[in-house]
Length: 288
Image (cartoon, rainbow, N blue to C red; front, side, top):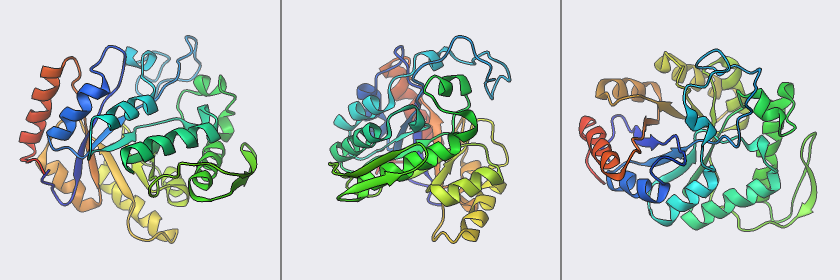
C-alpha cells in the first residue's frame, strides 16, 4: 500500500459473535493492501460495575460488543491461517487477566505459526470491576502489567527462563516455541506524560485511544520522553482514526505517527470488501 510519510494503514475490528469471522475478514484486509489487523479483548463484563466507561462517563456501555468480544488469540490464529503478510495485533489485550506463563506460550505459538507477524497491544484496564474478578488490585495494575511483560519476554528470549517479582515468580524453566523475533509491545492509553514515561521504560510504542485529541502534539511529546529515557530510534505510534483523510495522515506522519487504523465494517463479506476498497481509494492507495 502506498503510504503518506511512511505511515502504514491497518484495520481494527471490534470483534463479536455477530460480526464477520476473522478467517473471512482478514484475507479481505490483506487483499485490499492494508498492513495490519488489530482486535480487542474483554473476557467478561460484570453486570454491576462501579468503574465508569471512559467514553460514556457512567456504567453504561456504548456498544454491546463489549459483552460479546471474541478471544483475541484464537481470532488472530484463525487470521494467521488464511493470510501471509499482514501484521496480527491486539488493540488492546489485557495480559494481567491471564496466567503469564500460559499467555506467553499462546502468543509465542501464534507468532511461530504466523511467521513472526504478532504484535502485542496492551492496556492497563479501565474496567476495574473486570480486573477485580481476576484478582488484579486496581492500584497495582501498572506494576502487575510490567512484571507480566518482563516475565513473558524472559520466556520468549531465554533458554532457561526465570523471573522473581511481586506478582509473577517462577524458577529456571524451558519454554518453546520462541517467537521468530522480538514481539513488539504497544500500550493503548491516554496521551499523558505519565503514560508516555511508562511506555518509554517498558514498551515499544503507543496506541491512541478514541478520546485522544491533539495527536500531532502528543506524538512529538512521546518522542521527547523517549529520548529523555535513552531509547534509541523512535517509538511506534498507532493512531485510531474514524475515516480516511490524506491531509491528516500526512500531518500525523510528519509528527512521528507510524500507523493509522480504521474501523472495520463487518456486517457481511460484501459490505466489508466494499468498505475496504473505499478506504483504500480515499487514501489514494494501491496494493503492494
